[in-house]
Image (tube, rainbow, N blue to C red; front, top):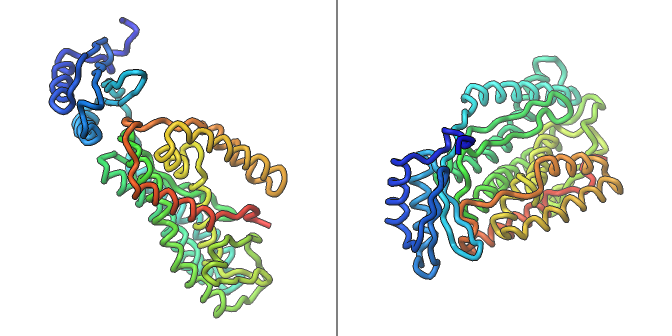
Length: 356
């Protein structure tokens, strides 16, 4: 008993509050009490609207520092524990990282702009307008898609954290931090899919703008960007960009944004695709994750070594995706269609050999 941290101990006032809340929303037949949790036993047949009832409980408890979760281990239970206090980073960290990433992408973009415009100031302006701005727009809207969908489900989330990387592509992308557990499989699927969908749809009109600028603004020097391979979406839209001459910076920026979409949609670990797979498949998503890591390792040794790094990275993150608080709620046809669309986006965005 003395080994239990005081900050997660259930106090007497906690017990009464939690009991009243749960029993007013769910018909239970037994309660098990211990110093750090309350477990309520119930029958699904007694609670035909259980998903909605549990979500009402969750919306009340989580902001007050509790975590309720559902388990099916021979019996249906709701267990409520205290959520240990967590200190989150201040928003100024997001602003600093945004500024650094903006600077790094402008710098990288200015290097690619040397093939199209003379003068350091003009190259910096080109780097901002035709590389940094479109890339940051795709990445930023991607993360805001996650953010606002999380807010829709009353899940607290941070603003985007951008990652500066002042060589080659200018950034390692961006991410948000979910500060509350995901309530159910529907929310997990939609929060995971929202970012790639928004980022992918943002990329589509930019593809045409970049292609047009690439055709009308002629290079003045033979300075080539990283040699890349274009994914299937380019052929589907009838966009054929020659790599025989320097690529206009915006072409490369949009390509990076689409490539980031494909990477996020890999159905493994804590990536967006991992959220979608877990939401739709439950525990069976682990098998998909194992298969994807095996695919990345084989592809890494056979065709493109970069996949080896990614395979070890996702293994480091952990292949077993944690469940939602209610991991037994049903998935709607709408969410299945979201999963199908996510798979389609992955097929259209993924390139087996992205860099030649």
